[in-house]
View 1: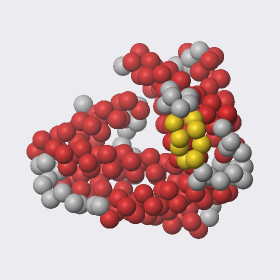
View 2: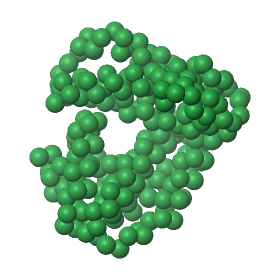
View 3: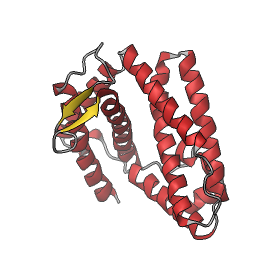
View 4: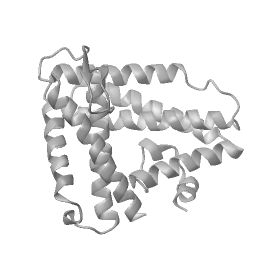
Length: 231
């Protein structure tokens, strides 16, 4: 497990740095039009047009996922920072600097809040469309929504440093959605429930987020299901 997760984190570092290169080479200075489309070539391995805010959103989520997993890897396997090559920490420094610089732009933060709010409202509107609690497709859908909202919660937490009323309202919206999705997950039965638990267990092991927490990905779980995922 240690070797596989280390290899995965090393690959993710390259993907993260590719996004950072696009952010550095394209026009991402403070005050730009964040809804405008720019051409990027490193993130996807070929030239594609994306909206500025969307690339930034993906970069920040990926940065949080990756940096958190590296730190958890060190603690989980009892390793020092020196266990990683210097090149990895160079990626961490470059991406950390870029993330900090982006989060100083008030217009960008407002655009990211709007994205998180809009996507959460759409999720609420589409909630509970499947009534078959044993449907395997329903399990895939619920888990996808759970993990998507987990990413929203973590990004909203990053934006929460602004301590604005908008942040408080956004966090309340996302936490409420998290509880509702958790309720849908608890209603799954049979093969659908087993598949959902397997998906979430795979996610936890890939990110080394193995313990149960009061919110986010593990917010749905009671003690029995936490133990189930730990086996």
